[in-house]
Image (tube, rainbow, N blue to C red; front, side):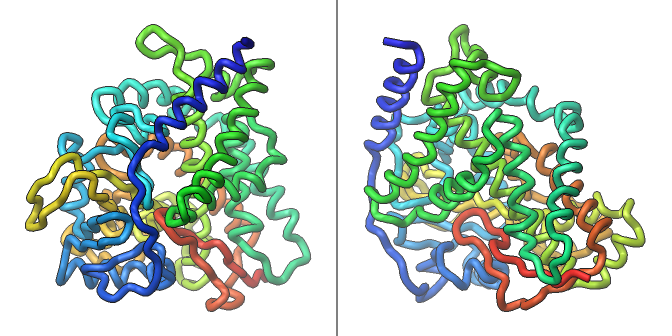
Length: 423
């Protein structure tokens, strides 16, 4: 049997084991009471989660739902941080809340290491990725990223109204992560489908969800085979050759990490860029100030990350326990809303306001604890360059129709349609 065929067979066997978990009832529909029946998939959450989170923080700081087989939603910074740092009582073997819980045997590696990994394996798996995401490595990608942003702006010439989400924001991380992984840049449109399949189809019937997720992994296996046949200097070839504990990574580890980098590397940054442009389009004073004071952009960018943090992560309770006034059961979901943590007035002064010259800003947009985003330097570079180029080339822009702006649903929140009128 050829080496690449063996890789495919081993990977499929590992994925079959991962699918031997627990499936809960699919529950959709309007929320009756956010403290006892929350759902981050409902339209009102996508449109404005902050109002809901602020209300819960006041009257029920740890909300519960029977949906998804049982889940909890803490809304205070201190509670979210406590869970994020507590790897003894909360597992990361599944970080996307859905109607499916992978088996406990999947720990400590999980399906997408290192983000799905528990200690002690997590530390070593994460360490493998650090060289690709240092500031020096990211700086080498900045010129190409800047040139690509300019080319996207060039393509908008002559248009009065553009969709800044689909015509600009989404393309930037797609190109950057495709270059890093050594994937064909023309495959970008497929990546958006993969993102939606994995992050927005979480409450689908199991057979349909498995079919959608399989499309991503089938694509990644094609890329693996291509890199086995034609090795080159990129992150995919690195993952195929790097060793952990004296052995090359297993097929499930390689493909799982590739899936993590592809999905997390695209949707989070796409959402952050879009939310920042949405804010500037509806807030002329901030837009004009950044154009007049470009040196303020890095500070403003951190505030956009705080105020519009795109990422919410999930954990699973390890054992039955009484925690902060509530009785949690083994394998209950925990939804760690970093956006809620970033809007907690006990942690941030003027928490509900966007203060673009905020000087002290220890936000949680990149997560907290051992799973803090390994690609934070890359995301910051992409966001900064995207905003710099947009403000240089298109300084005067407004929302063409505020009611036409739509937001993604699920654990990553950002504009999916963002019509802007440019002058």
